[in-house]
Each structure stands twice: as C-alpha cells, then as structure tokens.
Image (cartoon, rainbow, N blue to C red):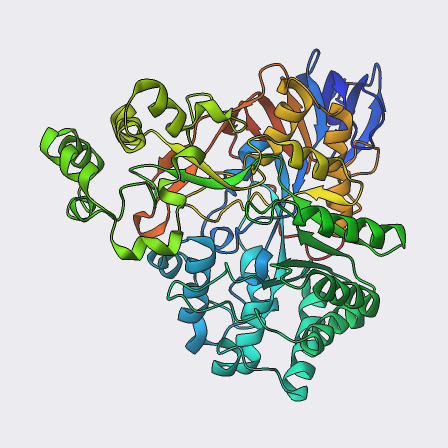
Amino acid sequence: MAATFDLVIRGGTIADGTGAPLFEADVAVAGNRIAQVGTGLASGREEIDARGRLVTPGFVDIHTHYDGQAAWDSRLAPSSWHGVTTAVMGNCGVGFAPVRAADRDRLVELMEGVEDIPEAVLHEGLGWQWESFAQYLDYLAGRPHDIDFCAQLPHGALRVYVMGERGARLEAATDEDIARMRSLTADAMRAGAIGFSTSRTLNHKTVKGDPTPSLRATEAELTGIVLGMRDAGRGAIEMISDFRELDAEFSMARRLVQASGRPMTISLAQNHVRTERWRDLLALMEAACAQGLPIRGQVAPRPIGLLYGLQATLHPFCRHPSYRQIAELGLAERVTAMRSPQMRARLLAEQPEEAVQVLGKRLTDFERIFPLGEIPDYEPRRDQSVAAIAQREGRAPAEVAYDLLLEDEGRNFLSTQFANYADFDLEACRTMLASDCTLPGLGDGGAHVGIIADASFPTYLLTHWGRDRPTGRFDVTWLVSRQTRDTARAVGLTDRGTIVPGMKADLNVIDFGRLSVERPYMAFDLPAGGRRLLQRARGYEATIVSGEIVYREGEATGALPGALVRGPAH
C-alpha cells in the first residue's frame, strides 16, 4: 500500500511553537507543508522515530550576516548546525547592494571593519553580478541552499549608492537624496527585501577606521526611507544605536514606527560602563509596546564578548613586539617558538605596542578573561577568571594566560565579555529575555569570523535557560516559541514557526538530554583560504527544511531545499 505522507515524525514530544504545553503526537508532512498533527497517523514514505525526543519548529534567527557567504556557499553554517531553518541577514546597516562598481571596495571595507570578514575572502567570494538590490536577490536565489534566508536592505550600501562620497563622509542627505532613497527602498521591498537595517553606533567602523555611513543620518533621511517601506506596504526595521541621548533617540524611533506603520527591533544589551542603562531602554520599549507600537529589543542569551586564541584575531600578546615577529608563522611553529624559555621571558616582560590602546584594557583585563573550557562555560564564576587562577597559584595573570593559550597545541581559547556580564552573572540577560517586548537575536552568524562563535545562541538558549542553569530557568515550550513563532512574526513571516497543519514543514528532532554546544574551533574553508571560527552542536537528530531532511546528527544529507524568502510569506 502506498504511503500517505512524504514524511512522518513518529511519537515525538511536541513543543509546537505556540507556547502550549508539551504533548506527544505524530507530525505528518506532505510536500513542503505540515499535513497533520495527531496520534496514529498513516504511514510516510520516510519516517523518523522520535519517541523520547523533542520535536520543535525550525528556529528563525533574525540577526545574521550571511550576505557574503550566501553568495558563495550553499550551506549557511554554522547557523544550520544549530536548528536554524530560516536566517535573516543584512543586519546593522551593512551589506553588498545596491552598489556601483566604483563603490564595491568601500562596501568591502565597511563589512571587514564592522563584521571582521577579511577583504580577500569577500573579493574572491563575491560575484558582484549585480547593481540593484533586486539583482542581488536574483543572484542569491540562483544558488541552492541548505536553509531558507531573508535579506534586509542595508542603510550603508543604500546611502553610498545614492550619495557616493558625500554619503561616506556623513554629509546630510538633501531632499533629492532622500526622495531617491525612498524610491529605492520601496523597490527593494517589492523585490523581496524582508526589511531595512541601520546602524547609529560609534563601534561600527570601516577597516580604515572611518565611521559607518549611516552614523549621523538625520531623522528626515530615516523618515524618507521608512516611508518607502510604507509605500511598499511591507518590511521590518532593524536598528542598532548607542542611544547617547536616550530619550531623544528613542522618541525618534517611535516616530519612525508611527510614520511607517512598520515594526522595529533594536539591539539591547548591558553595557559594562553604564551598567543600568539597558533597563531604561527596556522600559521605553515596554511602554511603547503597551501603547501598541511594535518596537522590540533583540537580546542575547549569554554574554557578548570575544574569543582569544593563537588562531584567533586577538589574544593578550598579539601586539607585543616579539609576538609580531612570529605572527605570520604557522600555528605549530608559533607554539614551538612560544614554548622557548627565552621567548616566554621576553614576551612576558614586554609591553604591547601603542596601537593596542584602541582596545582599551580588554586584551589584558584578566579579571574578565576566562578559560572557555572543553565544555564551553558562558556563565563562569568570578573565581574562575585568569586573575583568580593566578592569585591562587601565586603567579602573574599574564603567565597563566600564556600557558592557557598554548594548551591543545595552541588551539585553546580564552573568553572575555564586554556586555551582559557586568555583575559576573546572567541575571541581566534573564530579565531581558523574560520581557514580552524582546526577542532572541544578536548571534551574528557569518560575521566576526576571527573573534566570536555566537551562531550557537539558539542551542544555548534551550540548554542553559531551559535545562542546565541551577536557578531562574524558563519553560522549554516558552523558549521554543520565542525562537520560532515570535522571531518569525517579528519579520512578517507567518507561514512558519509553529507545528500546525498548513504551516511550512521546517522542523527539528532533538535529543534534549544530549543537546549541547561543542567547543569552538578554527576552520580555513572560506574563499582565498580565509579562516573562520565554527562551533557545532550535539543532539540535533534531524533538521528538516521544506519537508526534506537536511541534517542528521549534525551531518549534511546532501539535500538543499533552502531558498531565498522574498518578503513576508503567508
């Protein structure tokens, strides 16, 4: 007798994305849609025994930077290793369209500076077979992918396209410039952009140190752009800002949402200098939500920080003169050199070059530098820091860091935090996550390839906050709904994010007891031999996109059903 369905996930424990209590059921898939959810369903052409396993919708990650990788790679790893079945890229106002040929280098310099993706990688990997945003989308749609992805129109690229050198120099846009940006924004939304992103933070600079072009964009300019979204009747707004003048800046954000009728997300994190400022911003968001304005914070489930290592972009000795002399050697050669007693003594006695001061104390703030560990610990106790270890052992902190860097033949990593960990715990994160006016995000998959590995955020959200943290855990069904239905709805995707008949068949089958993030490692698989930090997961028994199994136990099946999602889908 012929099978009734293409795929049946049999007997799993369902977290359906709605926040409803867990229940046991079969999930039947026909084509790329969920056909039925219930018990004793008819047979499938292919079946997965999910008894004792958690079955969830595929995760929707609304903050990635695969704008380049999607052009050269069919696999949007590492996000696709962490249960993500839809990724939203083009965040923080950076991307590669629209673009004139003369401005390609400028966009590469901006992406390299803001997102730590090397120039050589981008120049070799990008085809540049586009000028308009619509042409860029067409180019991306021509390559099969493992998961679905959405692209936002980046303010930096749009501004340079319209204003050229004036835009890069942060000059104010003229009325004519604004009218052109409005028209191009409407065109991009109609072509399939999921939204528009902008950056207003001093932290975002080109590799040459120039500020991001959108830094000082006036309210008139931003209003013109979001009115283009209103003209098209679609799109979400994503913004990152320093909120140096909190009330004035947030009031402008409110006016942009009111003028456009479009939803907005804003990056929200605890600054380690102004440690309570995030509470003020969250309060403003919650007040706006209470008044019916769709403004929500994007928050991280763990500290925001950096990984230090001999294979990474940074470590505590990377600017010491003696290290600079060996920096271009292979890893094994550097490890051998650093194990020399003479080199060790010289490096530990040296002071870093002046250029390191742009990083402030961060490279040698040993009270906030921790061994990451074979099983990564992202909520370490204060007494686990390099400084604390040094005090117990009667050694200098730099000596401890030096020895830790050489472990595992130089492949070890140290971690440091610059946000969300001011009090050496994740209570600030917990408060942010608990708010009805926030969403999980900020994982930056595809970016900062030499200094972070945060695309694992979705896995960490479930494991740390739903299972492992001794206190303050959240219900797993609620966490799943936040990473599926809620993130999908925030960008206008209403055809995915829940396990309900008729919805898109994007699913995860998870051994929840075994689910974990592995230790990051450095791979050298980008174009031009570029490196990137990767981090795998354990416990994803199957990840399914459009009804096809794309990963089993973290290994690719060869199926590539993922596609560009052109704007809101219903």
